[in-house]
Image (cartoon, rainbow, N blue to C red; front, side, top):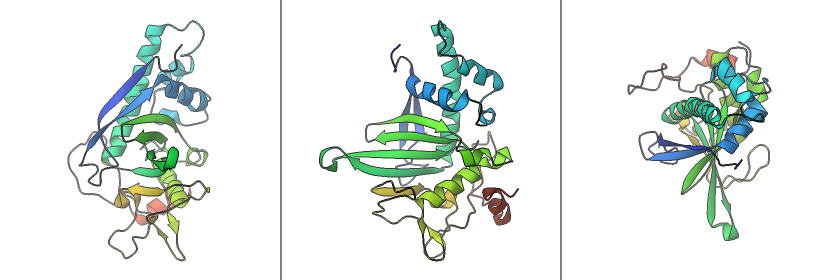
Length: 249
C-alpha cells in the first residue's frame, strides 16, 4: 500500500503566518494516511493518552484495527474520513482562537528554503504538529504529551500544554518570562531555530499592555463550543489558571 494512498485537504483555515490572524489570509493543510497511521499506532491505539476527549470509544477501536491484514479498503476510507473530520474541527477551532506557536528555520543550500513548524494547542489538550513551507502545509503528528496526560481535569489539559510550550520556547528573563526576541537561535531543549513566534500573544497569556510583554499565565478562554459569533477575548481568573497549569487542581 502506498504511504499516500489516502489523503485529505483541510481548506479555508486561518493562516497563523498572517499578522492579522485569525482575520487575515486563509490556508490549506494536507493530512496523509501515513500521518494518520503514525498517530494511531504510536498514540491512539496504545491507550496511554486521553483520546476520548476528541474521539469516541468506537472510533478509537476502529482505528486500532484499521491496518490489520485483510482490512477492507472501503471501510478504511470511511474510518479515516471520520478521523480526519475530528482532527480538522479541532485544528480549525485552534486557528480561529488562535493558539499557535511558529518555529522557523532555514534549510537547503545556503539556507534558501524556509521550513516552519506549527505547534497547535488543541482544546482537548493534544499537540498538533504541522510542517509548512510557502507552498504547502502537512500534518506530521498529533499527541498528548506525558505531562498533559497527568492533568486531572480533562477540560484543563490545554492549560498544562500551553504552560509547557511557554516554558520551553519563551525567553526567561531575570524576573519574568517574555516573548522570544527576533533572531532567537535555540529553544530550551537546545534545538536551533531562526525565529520563534507565539500567535497571538494575548491568547497565550502574555500581557501586551505591560512593558516587556511579560507572561502572566492568564491565557484567553476558549469560546463556548458551537458559538462562532465575534467576541472580545476573556482572560481566565489568574488563580484558576495557575492552579491548573501547575497541576494543583
